[in-house]
Length: 312
Image (cartoon, helix red, strand yellow):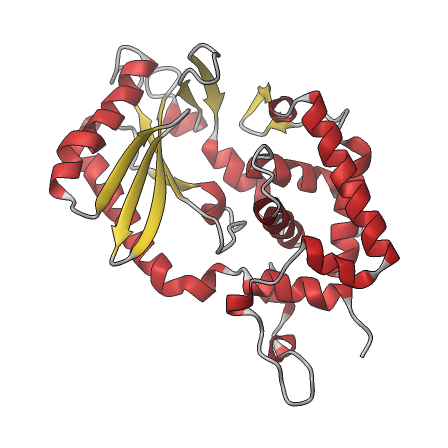
């Protein structure tokens, strides 16, 4: 049987679905709810709303070989004098008071914009990021969903702040059922090839941009991926990608000129090698063998009988 790039990519997407680790996710989501309740108990009326779900899991772009659980806790404008005070208070709460009462919490880390938590959930190691943000003016968040985050100093860069709208991040990808499998495939490539300098948020934005002006998006998964890769190859060095939650935050600036050039060259090399030999696609987009679709007796993958909704 002739090798099919599209069938292989469908198997890759299928094998990286979060539903394969549902038992782990059930424990992780239970812990997420416990953390949200703990924030409610600790900060009470300092918050305009409860913590909200964010990140790749909330946006349905997560893959089961590398994921975090993300939540964002909005705070009222008058709850803390400074953004640093807010960020440090959340870190101190989890590293002392909360850690004493939750034996599953094994590590608390100060991260650039968040407090990182690591849990040992009956042998399953789960990472969670808690992102605190303060509304811009008193009672502003409920109307606008805008938050200001504290950005800790990193790589000799001074501490600063940034404006974001996490609700907009999630809504930006809502309805993008044809783009999401492409994003997941590029995240598989990024993880397996160790491309840590490429942020998942950047991949989401540039894939969505690749199809922004298309009246018809290809149904064929390889054609969709190919189109996105060609777009990245041809545009990544010059494109301006704005944060949908803050037009002043240019996400494309997170990559250096050399990193953009490297990414363009990576896309060019992959496209050329796959064109030379279709099966070279396996080098870059590998099936998670632990959850590979089972072979049917007639040689077809059993997953093939499922609807295309499993890839959205």
